[in-house]
Length: 606
Image 1 (cartoon, one colour):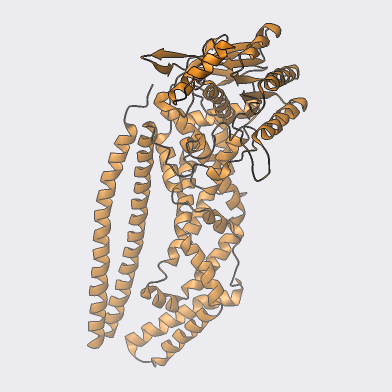
Image 2 (cartoon, rainbow, N blue to C red):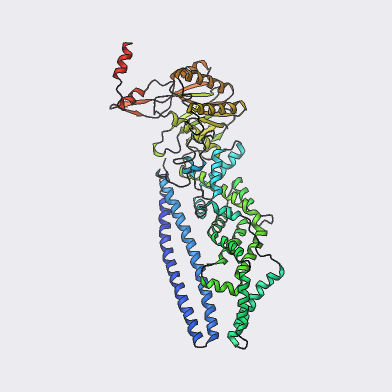
């Protein structure tokens, strides 16, 4: 069943129209701002030249107020335009993902690849064409890392898994919320953003009574004497100029440290606004699930004040900083000592709200990661949430690999007591390794609380280990065979520690001769079974299939096979019981141009 109702396409078109309208409105605001500047200050200069000083002051102040209002309006409209652009991009990516064209998406988790991890490297969880790249909708550093942790360290408690399943299922139905939440987060692309935001702010101006009082009195005297001079001319112009000079000296004191603090907040304006919108979106949404309601409750301080309100206060401070490169702001700053008032506001905000910052960002990251899992459920309504059972048990109907899209071939599969191991044989390219990864990646999704690619799926809770993609390590002078032995050793040690292990072994001991490979594989499988492990082994060694007869039901054989049509090899990738009865290696060698006639003749003669 494909996600084919075109909802992403309809939303993309809606935002494209909205963006076009917003661009026109922004262009009008730019023209109004330019017009107000030219007319207002031109009129003020004209009045001043002809001695109408009172009118000059009125026009100057009115023009300044209108100009500042238009700057704020322009800034607000640009925020809305960027927000709508983000929403358009989200729906574009949704369309691409549905079409299977997601392999160039950013944030593929390539930096998270660790070949030594028990299963991540083998199951393509990180990197290009990975599960992480496919499901990820997170943008903040916290969200990206939490999604990584969900895949690397799955939950192992029924209650926690069911809580997360409930949250993911509920979020899957809230497309509008998820997209608006992601659109807010999309402007937080730089790791430095949260680090800078969490950096403790220094109170560069101590909030003592006298300096605080002077920060109000000096602007009052400056503006008051200036207005009185313009209105009455009964005092010397030197008096307001003297206060202006005092203000300039005050701004020069500690200017470098104060500028660094205010400049940092100015740089983070967009990030602060994004976090504020994320918090508002999450706090206002109504949830029924316990986990989501718990997160909502956590976003309050000791006084039961919402964290979004605290972010709003910081966002307002950032807005008040205005455009510091504007000449008008420089005049405004000298007249009002605006920088001091900003610093005092930041100091008060820090004392009141800074402690709740880190926790809030962590919860927002959790929601981003849950939204990534919820998207799977939304786009694949025919996938199921697994049921968790006690014991060594896996059963799935129409199990498929989540990343294969329209090329996916699904199979039914089960491991039930007394079964402990499944041997899968088959010819080259028949699908053995892919099926092992299918089981592994669906178990990872199950233990994340996500839906799995199956009609239904039941499983016990295991620690997952794999040994599939092993290569030489020249830097450490380790051969592929020895690297494989080290991986096998870690699995055996985990089993002996008492962990409930589910293992995935692909062509084990392929780096040695056939005799040693066979007997080593038999010994390993028996030891894992005897220690209580459960798992799957793919192999070309058909003799391993004899284990089924000797195991008393603990080992079961399955196979994949190929067929030939018009002298071409084909595969149906369907899992069947029993040992493989076909082989294709010689046929594939022949296709590469290798002449096998002489070798076959020699063999027949001997």
